[in-house]
Each structure stands twice: as C-alpha cells, then as structure tokens.
Length: 200
Figure 1 (cartoon, rainbow, N blue to C red):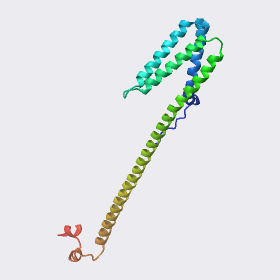
Figure 2 (figure 1 turned 180 degrees about the vertical axis):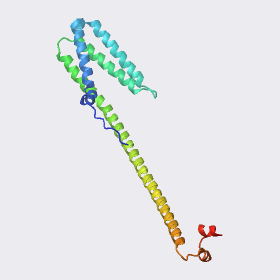
Figure 3 (figure 1 turned 60 degrees about the horizontal axis):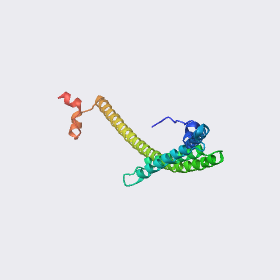
C-alpha cells in the first residue's frame, strides 16, 4: 500500500513536449545542409522528393481505407509525406524565408496533432489512476473490516477464557471452604463438580 513517490526530472517531463519542434528543426537543418551541398535549384532532387512524398501520402491513404485500416500506420505515412515535402522545398529554395515559413507551419501542425494524442493519453492516465485509487481504497476498507472482525474475535475469545478461568477459580475456592457439600450442589441441579466425582 505504501508505494514510493517518484518525482520525474523536469527534462523527462519536457522532452515529449519538445519532440515536434526538435523533429521539424532537424528536418529544416538537414534540408539546408542538403541545399548547401547541391540541392538548390536541382530539378532532379526536387522531383525525387516529390515522388517520395507522393508515395508516402499514397501509403497513408491505403493504410487508412477500409475497416482494417490502421490509424497509426496512416498517421506515420502522412507525417513522412509532409516531412519529405518540407525537406524537398527547403532543400530546393534559395534563401531562408520560405523554409522558415514552412518550418513554422510544420511545427504548428505537429503540435496540433500531438496535442490530440497528449489529451487522449492524459485521459487514459487519469482514468487508470482513478481506477487504481478506487481499488486501493476498497481493499483498504476490506482490510480494516477484517482487522476489526479479527480483533473482535480475539477479544471475545479472551473474555471467554478469562470468564472460564474466573469460574474455575471460584469453584476451586468454594470447594475449599469449610462445610461445602458437593452432594447438595448436585441435588440442586447444578452440574457435578470434578471434586465430587473424585470422591465417589
């Protein structure tokens, strides 16, 4: 019941929130490196990126069609398609204004998509924690009730043992008194005492 409280490091908590910006910035940086190494105004490189982007978009469309469609695969394919298109334009264009504008749009879109999954994940986490808390409280209540029941049974047993011990002591003390007649006790309808049984 007593679980250790683990505090997450602030970097571990912030890393998922920074992932979309890191991803789009990495694509922009790689595209600009590619631009500096010969991709600027290269029609062949632009055509290659256009074909790859269209292929990824087609794969995403195929993955999302029908009852057996997988939303994770489709989302991954569409993200890949957008990243390839962004990299192609950023690698082909001269100057930074257009690539930076595309970077801002891609980052905003990535955060928009990620926020949806973060909300869903947060709802599932809260529901799980609530369920665990309810189960813990229910088990703690059962444990308290069982502890009270066991304590009550122990106290009743102790009380019964103390009563039997006091009764035995009283009988022994009474039998030791002068003039005590066990036959008179038997005649009165009381149970026969061990001392009286021994005398027979």
